[in-house]
Image (cartoon, rainbow, N blue to C red; front, side, top):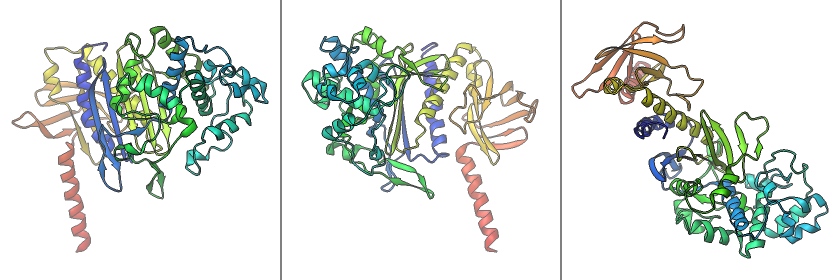
Length: 475
């Protein structure tokens, strides 16, 4: 970490309560947030339900279809074979996958593994009949996939721009099979999953995982979400989207991808995978390497991948400088995994910066005032910010984001703060009064004249109001 490791601990303390708060204000069935540092899981939080109909509580051990995370595994397999001098990533794939030589579009016989890994080959994204993503038909088997590839021309000239392709990665699965002599799923099991002891990870759905895998859900339709089929086999597209895993295994796997870990690949190969190959068009901060996406969050350059499967949306971000990994798993098709990951990182950033600015002599006194307080008109989280306190809006994924405008609160005395900075519509210059109890905690504050409560007390206020209204309507 840039600052003291205690900054990460402070961040996880905030995340523990804030993620509960956020879950109660969104419609995602459930999610898991996991943070690892230096190869050790330091925080895990599961909110909501793995299955709504049976009211199965979400746990950090639940399995998810991690979809395009599969591409990082497939690219790693290709790089392993390249290190063994069994293939050259800059030679035509058709040199190894011989049936490609018969393609009528002669450009297909010249595409390379590098182009496929960085999505610059120009291959169609999901074939001409991609309704398997809507679960209207099955994912193609090897025979159907080969037929589809041979009947489809390149849709873009190679090396023109980054154009994402699941079919391209499925073709990489064929490359691994042709070169290694093993089915892709067997090769990845022997070369990645078993060496890393990823006991909760596999390249394809297996009946044995059914009791442990989450139920995925559709978008909200007519006010409710529909459960989606759990027994989905990706068949010829396993290398592109077939994998399942849980948060702990993903942390272990991505830690092995850090330069210097001594696992999976040489550091030279890892640097090549994590090096930007193409910028993502019409995006300010997204790039792509070989099998990994690259993005920027504040001062961080991150690598990892996202995944979208029918009923699940997932995201992993890795900061190689700090050896930090954030994994977000959600069980609905519109789960905000990318926003959640950015929000988690913004929380960590805040506590790093506040820790660097903190005064050891005053920090404990400032932290006495911390908490989230609620009222009819809105909620506020008061958080230490080094030598000051700030008030932020917790009702969003970026309470400490670059666009947030926190109020600054000055310390007045042991039970009073003063609003020192806010916009013209706020309570500038007004006081915030705390009613501390004998244990040093508070259930209520008065902020600019209005009372605010901690969540449990606010629920009592709501119940009283509801009961009063119910009584009034019955008389």
